[in-house]
Length: 172
Image 1 (spheres, rainbow, N blue to C red):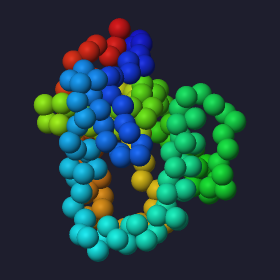
Image 2: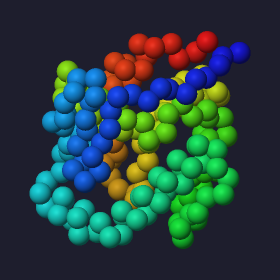
Image 3: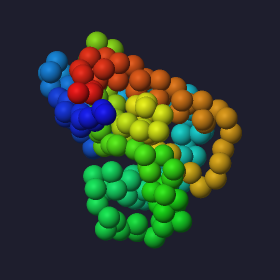
Image 4: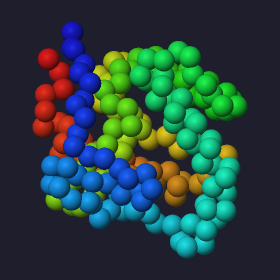
C-alpha cells in the first residue's frame, strides 16, 4: 500500500495586490504568471471579462474557498449562497477517491521566470494517478477554445510539477 505525503510548501509567494509571484530560492520577483503566459484573449474579450467581474469573482472565490476547506478536512463549510455549484462539486466522483497532496499550491520555474498556483494536486486512488485540479466556475458552458486555453495552463502546471515535485519522492 502506498503512503501519500503532503507536498512541502515551496519557497514561493504571491502578492495579491499585484498578482505577481516571488521565488525566495532565487530571490526575485518573477516576470510572468501562468495566466499571463496562457492568455490568448483579445482586448475586447478582456474588457468583457472585466465588465462581468462583479458576477464571476465572488462566485469563483467562494467555490474555490469551499473546495479548499473540504480538502483541508472541514465539514462545516459556508457556501455563501452557491450551494447549487458547491454541492455537486464536493459530491463529484473524483473526490470520493482523492487524497489531497497540496491545496492552493504555489510553484515557480525561476529559469523560465514564471510563477503559478494550482487549486489542487492530489492522488486518485482509483486510477493510481496524480491529478491536477484547476477550477473554472462559469455561468454557462462555452466553446472548445476556452477549454483548450485551460488545457494549455494545465500543461504549464505539469511542467512545474515535473521540475519541482517529481524530483522528490512522492511515495514511501
